[in-house]
Image (cartoon, rainbow, N blue to C red; front, side, top):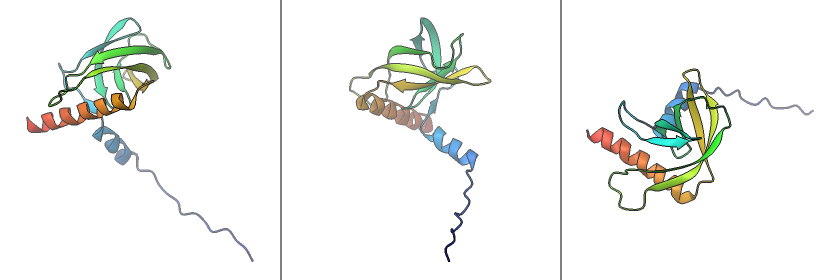
Length: 127
């Protein structure tokens, strides 16, 4: 006789996943951070990761996209810190924050953001 073996049930624990995500994302403190130009409007970046960034909505819609360019002030880094990519809004939450994804981004650009996030976190821990 043949029978199917039941697969064990797995549960996803959401709060652990969210904490893991925050490890690689840098949230700017009040009065810190930088601004970018998105679709002709200046927006203040709330947080950044190698995958993307978020900012307050100013009349944008999900899936809006624009080419962006900015320069990062990376502590303890002497190389080129210019960043350019396309930025696409994936979602807008109930707090009116646009959550965005970097597109058309080179590996070097991703690595620059990783370095920036790491150095900013180390700087916060030191102070």
